[in-house]
Image 1: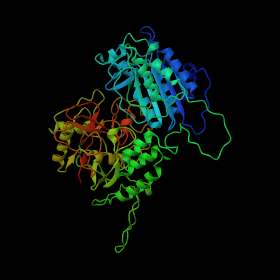
Image 2: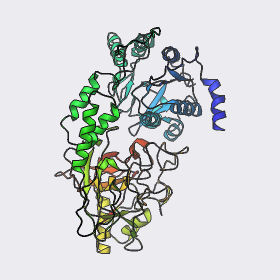
Image 3: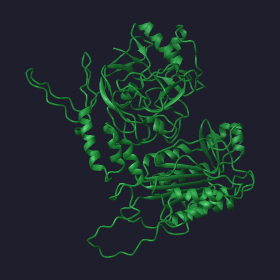
Image 4: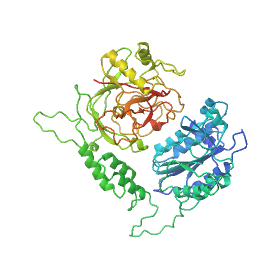
Length: 605
């Protein structure tokens, strides 16, 4: 049904002047999305239609598979983005050009369709489309190089309806391989006297039509040209697009008979020629002295045939073997969470065989840990065994790096579920907790408690400790990620990409819930833990740090004197899927309450 609806709508909003160019074998997929929303009905049409049509034509002529839509309603905009997302390929090249209205709210950007009313903040949020959903589709596809250009930094009644103190777009974080450009800096709008035919977008369209001009050079040329006219602003850039994104490639030479001499093309993609490009050299220089096997693996993932690939493989194997620790066992011994299958018991007199390299064998199968509950109102707790894992990620944000090995030498219990309103209310009723958070009309009971700050969370853990005689506390960041991964090494506990009905987030399911769901609505991970991804964001014990270079490797919490920013893990119902990855982390002021933030507790054996 969806496919037939999409096909019918495609006849209305996809209008390309030339047939698709066949993609040469062995070259990266080239996919583009162009949206031109000009006719909003509230005033004169925006001067963006010509730019959108020109962008579609230039991209199509350059061999891009283009999804083009004009004056889209909410449904048409969602379908166009879904169609574009379905065509993305790993290691491909991608360009997104959106021209129209957009608004920012709570640090996020929303694309405004032409049928969105501007009567109230809630109506705008309901009808607008979250840009993060589009960005997440690109992130999951892992492009070689991608650019999102937003011609949307305008004053509008939609922004006034949401928050008249805000202007333009919210800042977008730097991402690997994906650059975002905007026609004005974050928090600013385009100048009222700017003429669209002489601005940065017009210059960019000329630049990308230039044969063999890389996107970085095209943006620089457009910025320089626009800066000559004081009425215009140069593009704001979140980062520089990785090399290799050329919209108009040079004409392909005629086929000639193969000779015995190998020729290296100047446009060989990174990691495939005999000479390393500047990005490969920079990557290698950053890790050449490292003793972390994961960093060499990250290099090999990016440049499998790179200049230093053989050396990287040798170092990866060497450091994995050297750093593979002996895992301490708890009493009674819990199931192991190592990456090696358990060895059969050896006779007492036998000498133990040396441990195999961690990468040599697949992860051991995991079984659901034993559980306990210390009182009727206490959370149910699952046993997490001692073990080692590689913490962090190289796939996205700098503050998730470097990937490093952590060894937890003692088992611990962690909540099967996030702490619920019912459990929290028991603490308030018995005088252990002072703050009774508002459920915002969603309901209490088995929903995870939210709208609490870090000190509230610690007060709840202290109350549990007094009531039960056992030590309860917030998990450390290492303990949390170890339990969330449950032996997995993929981006999400269930695999490499977002899957429907695995978690509660904005972009995880066809119909966002926009509020926390009762616990146990989504499948548990391999340790039997629910909602480690999504639902409520969870406070952990650690102080925030911008990277892992100074973080402990023994599973303890990172602490600095008087730190005010603490770490939240797991993402929430209000976050896009990027923040549900097992390695995802973000920060919040420890004494500030927010309606998405909750907790999960740890109990020491």
